[in-house]
Length: 204
Image 1: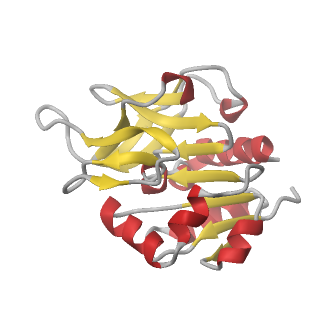
Image 2 (image 1 turned 90 degrees about the vertical axis):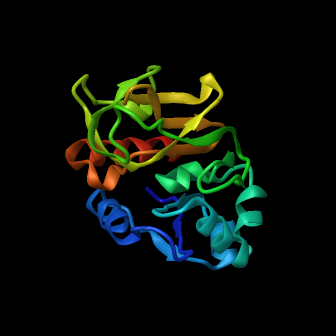
């Protein structure tokens, strides 16, 4: 893997466990908020844990929202957890907020009732299509989620993998050179490591 990979440092997210997970699969990833470094990268990872509005404000304050919206066509952008949600047009988390608008869809809350919110813990990852991102994963692949909001009204053609939590929760989405993981691959054990290896092969 000779691609230059950077992770955006914008004050939001559990970045160090993700950096360590990438190191375990043989990847050196630069954590940075430097615009030039981000623009020159082959692969940009947008992590995130926390509130949608706060994350968007942090990106805007650093001018990174426009860097991502206007990314070079050859560049891969990988959103993880909240980072995936930021890729969409609108979020309904504590109000209505504009996202990056790189993917069509809306971030909405799980309905109160029989579901435990947040959706937290292990859930089975099911394939929507056959794809290299899911290579060498069997039908008993479980991944780790922590979220109260999920992507809805998405383009069906972008769905790669999903989990059932009273409804179909998009787990992996892909459009052009944009990939989103709603779950945490860095917390998903051997399955997560295989997913990261698959990701690295795809973006290579």
